[in-house]
Structure formats: structure tokens, C-alpha cells
Image (cartoon, rainbow, N blue to C red; front, side, top):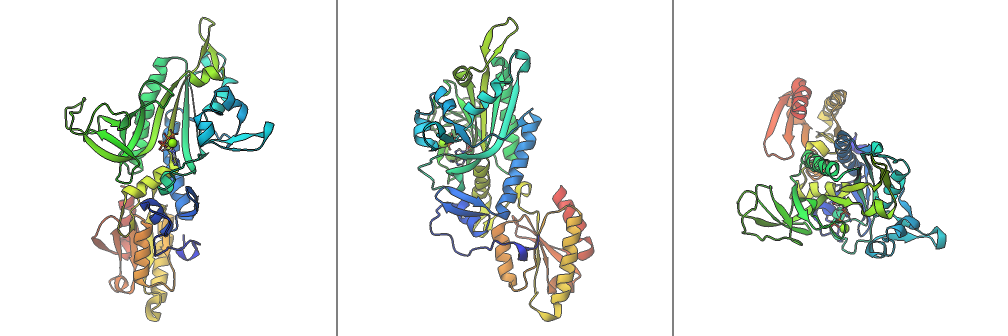
Length: 425
Ligand code: ATP
Ligand code: MG
């Protein structure tokens, strides 16, 4: 994409009403636009990252037999009354409600009620199970503490998967599968998540599991083993920092963290309340055994920024970067070389695109080299490619990785092939 055509512009100053690194950098670089506390629009660069994160998640969900659907945001009050959650804490304090009388609806903060009610119409016998269904969709919650940028939105993206099994044994196997799949997703996004035991929040007496990424800006606190084989949320922890890890004996640590995902055994809470039964082999009616599994997609994007940045801007991991290469054409104000630089850069741009490489091409005429470098660092594309009077005098281009200090000079003819090899490995 030509940067001259991108409608967003970078901002020098940090927005006054933001304290969190993710919001400051993402707004300054033009990835998101703040509408009000906890409510952000995604602009072209931000949406590209979000779509990549969603694609990584979607691929993993499909590998574990997930069937994708899209449920409505508007949810009938009736369903929420059947489970008692309409007048419960979630319904009273978290759910946005709109409409009057019989037309009153809730804006989905989560979708257990709705999906269970959909599913039960299609499940008769044990043969209809298991079912694994997910969606990637916008959720709405009244969050009084919306101060962490896109880490805690009042409107935010979530992937929510729900499992429907006929036996506890099968459910447990699937639960372990999701655990693995989640670790793969976070790793692919450039994050090391620690599986952390947490309380069931009224859903279950057993532990639930959170996926926590260590970060000073996190709202959670965990007691964890440095080898990541054990971790408990401080809210429920039976251990403290300095204790021995019950798994490997190493000394436990305490750290702030961000919850990027969590998984819950739901048992038969929703299937019983909403009468989602199946007939087993003996013809007996049994409630379906359920689990739910969430990942905050927009929070995940914010977490990547919290982890991968420096004082100059964002440093996107290649897997989720808005573009793979940022091509900078310099010296476009210098009459004697402008045409040549523009011509070489355009050619490189077209060749990179032909190779299937995603390129942001800074073709802006009136920006100085300094301004282009500052913007490139802020936006954080992993590979920077520079064409300038100086590089052309050596028939070459300059290649630099956003995460490194050193630069490489490569002959123009080899540049595209060279870069392609670096990106594909
Ligand atoms: P938290 O404790 O952070 O409020 P939660 O326990 O309410 O999270 P769930 O309801 O299980 O979270 O939602 C699943 C996932 O959605 C969370 O793990 C988190 O990644 C994400 N999430 C939850 N609330 C928000 C929010 N307000 N903004 C952005 N992402 C969120
Ligand atoms: Mg919450």
C-alpha cells in the first residue's frame, strides 16, 4: 500500500487522556481511534493486525473441530431469565440493556445462553455429540475500570468457543486439547502465556484456567514458577512468592500479568437451566456437559504492543504485523535524484508484491528522511527497506530489522530475493 494514500497520519504527542502504553502507541501510530473510555475504532493498520490475529485463532479452532458461527449481539431477555442471569450480578452490573417491556434485550457480554438454546434444537441423542462451536465477535460490557486502553474495552473483540459433550471424560479430553491450542495461538502471536489456575467465579468448584502474559501493566497478579509448569492467580493462591513450586521444586515468583484468554468447565449449569438434554444409549435424558473458552482478540492485540515495543514505537512480530516490509523512498525532494529513487522504489515495491510480500511503501513526497524513519519506528513494521541517493550510488538498498540496530546493504538485484528468504524462514 502507498503510504501517501493511507488516510491516517502519525501523531507526535501522546494523547493526554491515555495512560496505557498500548493506547498511546496505537493511537499515535494511527492503528486505533478513541471514541470514549473503553471504546475504540480500528483504522486500516489496526484492522490488518486484528484480522491476522483472528486468522491465527480461526486456524487453530478449526484444527480442533470448531465450527464457526456468528450469533447476534442483541439477545432475548427471556433466555437470560431462564438461567437467572438477567437479574443476577452480570445482568444488573455488566450487561448493557436496551428497549422496553417485551422488546427489552441485552447486548451480549457472553453467549452461553444463546448458543445453548440454539444447540438444543439440533441435539437429540448421544450420536449428535460432541459439538464444538465458536465465533469471533464484538462483546459489550460495562467495565467501570476502562483505563487500560484496548486491554479493557466496554466494546471489544472476543473469540468464544463452547464445547458440548456427552460425558465428563470426553469433556476433559477436549479441555486439554484447547489448552494446547491456546498456547500455540499465543506463541504464534509472539506471546508467552502461562497457564494459571483461577477460581470458578460461581461457574464451577474446580479451578478454571487463565492464560496470563507477564507484563508490568497487567491488572492481574500471579504466583508462578519460572519454568511455567505451575501458576495460580493471586486472588485464589494457596502459595506465595518464595515457596517451592509443587511441580518442580523451583522457587515461585510473583508478577503482574495480563489475562489474554481463559477456559471454564461449565458442567451442566446452562444445559439444565435451558433444558439442553440428549438421550443416552439406555434412552435416559441427560444434560449436555459444557465448557467455554475465550480469547480477547482486541486485548491480545494490545498485549502484543505492551510486550513488543521500545521508546520509539511498536515492534510487531512478523506473524501479526500490519505489513511485513516498510519500503522507504528517501531524497524525493532532491531534484537530481528524485526520479531515479522513485523509479527504483516503485520497481522494488511491485516485485515484492509479486512475491506475495505485504509492503507499506512510504512514497510521500514532502517528508524528510528523519520524519520517515521516526514514523517507521513508531508503526513498527518488522523489516525496513530504504532506497536513497546514497544507497543508489552503490547500486544497493539498505535492509534493517525493526528489532535490531544493525543494517545490511544489499545489491538492488538481489534485494527482493534476499528479503523474501528472510521473511519466509
Ligand atoms: P477479566 O477478568 O479481565 O475481566 P473475564 O474473566 O471477565 O476477564 P471472560 O469473560 O472469560 O473474561 O472473557 C474471555 C476473554 O475475553 C478474557 O480472557 C479476556 O482476554 C477478554 N476480555 C474480557 N473482558 C474484556 C474487556 N473488557 N476488554 C477486552 N477484552 C476482554
Ligand atoms: Mg471481566
